[in-house]
Length: 207
Image (cartoon, rainbow, N blue to C red; front, side, top):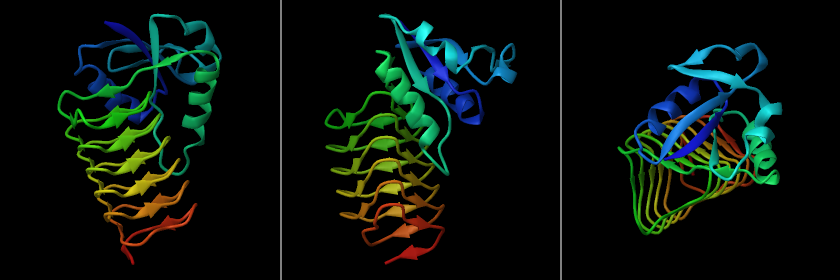
């Protein structure tokens, strides 16, 4: 069993704990939080470290998972991912025992696939992504790195989600559509046309 440190001690961390506990490959070794959180616990796990301690935790038998949420911006997750990677740290890739990832799909390091999510054949998900509960990444779709595919969102066949995007709960990206990097798609939006980088879609259909 591998030891994994969770980086981030907010609400998303709670959901990640539940997913990590569902798999036999990893055991939570500790949580990195903010200075005011040190000495407290989340779901029975102690918050013992802050960002400045991360390099001291890096070792041949330790792994990291970034458990900060991502809605408005990917910057905190990207910063921490790069900090760990540049220091030689290893990343856990976690798939809930209630999720399905095709053996013909690819997942990047540091990505988590949460309860009841589906990643189908020939789909590709990059590094440091969140595929949240009940999300669907269909066949041949590409989700690049540092993206959050939120709860119940659907990425249809051969769609491409570029780096650092947020796809909101219940939203649908139609087949063959590309969403430009750093875009924010709100909940229940329906994307039927290719979007440029840094697009912001609040809700409704985009055709």
